[in-house]
Length: 311
Length: 250
Image (cartoon, rainbow over all chains, first blue to last red; front, side, top):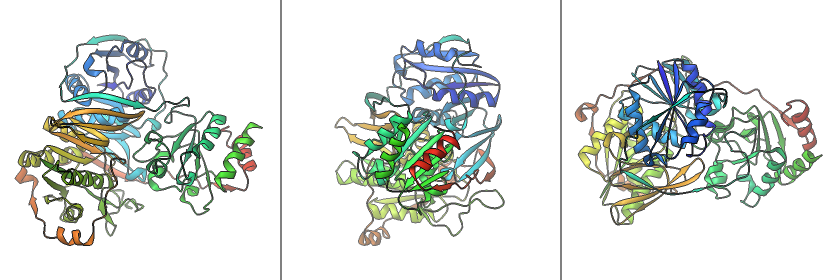
């Protein structure tokens, strides 16, 4: 048995999300390899080689993989699949795009977004926005899996010394081309890996008022998130969205401000260690999952909280 | 140009689902069912393509038991021209759905297939990518903007973890919808009446030559771990004190 973890990266650095998939792969067992498919991505392969528990790193360096186009990546994965019992990726935008395509080409039913490993063929995954947990068993020859990052600890980023083996690329399918990207720039910690997250909802009333949350986040070295309602209303970009179909977070401390707590939002944050809710509606469902609830007008409570933390 | 849009019948997004006492699944008897919200966005996009003169016909496809015809009627009331129902009582998993849709695609030869990025029941986020793979087509997933180019390609803006990304895909292609692609319309009463007269063809997996048997065996379905009920604090000062000295997270 051997497991191939597909590295998430931007050709320069290994995305820490990969380390969670490595832990899930270790729970499955067997020899663990990491695939780095990218363009001029040797630095990523070197970083992957240092990850604890990794036996080998495969580096497929080819212009066809520069922008993570799924048609090209799936072709490469299908070529490699014969050597592995499991193909594992973190359920990031890239993992979710590439893995099902790979699974279908292999005639395999993928297991999405697993939160637990029961054995090499049996896994636990959330369904219905996390309101039920299904335990499923796969009889497919190769298991194609995406991993919910928050459900597995990060593997140590150092301590390993795996060999890097270079692979030839599988070519460009020519089916799609990358045009460009607009990435949100932020000095803050990344939402999915931050220790503290401060999120705003419809109660923030407009995008300008998110500055209140920025000040609070600065004090706590927190990432800033939002509910779908706030994103749909255009207060903040889509990258802020926490929930069933947005980002899944599980920080040490999650502060929900002006968020009512729809099922779809709770699905993205209810595994946080400590949840604080600030909302003027004392019947808001968010209070049912909050460890500490404060019924108050956020426009007074948030600046007061920011001040109090400076003391 | 034909556009095919897949619509799934799911437990309504407002329903708080309950796990069955015997652990075999969730309660779906006497529960409100609706079209998967991401599929509504798909129907809206397809109808807009027709209204803009880019598409000539919009076909809504649903797979599953007889009641899926209601979901198809909803799509027809929103503006789809006709429906195809692949009738089966077998539990359909994403790979089987993709194979069935591929067989429908072979018959209908659409240039664009639009699917929701994920269904809110199994949260799998697989079917569109799988259909693209089986058809050998490009895939533009998690779309927030679709622009059809004159040369028969399309530019699609996609919602990715770090922001937005744009790709060009050749036709035919699969598009999966994200929340910001559009705001789906409500069907008007006259259109709901008109939809009753639009044709729905019924097919079976056998007629399509597809083995739709599930691959994953569900061993059990359980309630998630419940959070302990928390407390209400009276002031910001008390909140900070609790976070510092009780929870010790700041």
